[in-house]
Length: 72
Image (cartoon, rainbow, N blue to C red; front, side, top):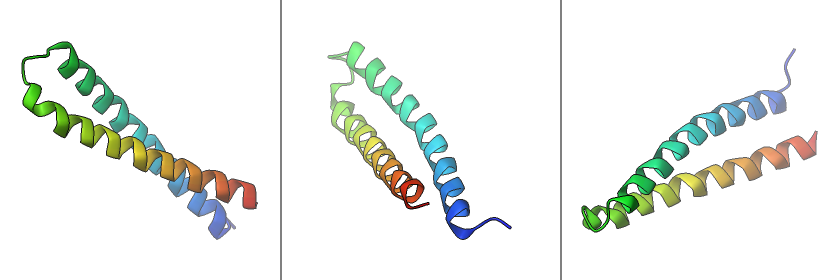
């Protein structure tokens, strides 16, 4: 039988994988926008803020995962 802690760890790993994928896409979008400057400069703050938020969430989930794995 799988313990509740192991289930939580697997759920976090799944969320991290999904966010990693999304974060990679956001990073590329931000890069593409930066390369095209000054065109579409008005989008820069929104894209940067969204990219920041994805990476902040990713960092938070990784810290939670580390804590759960260390608690085993």
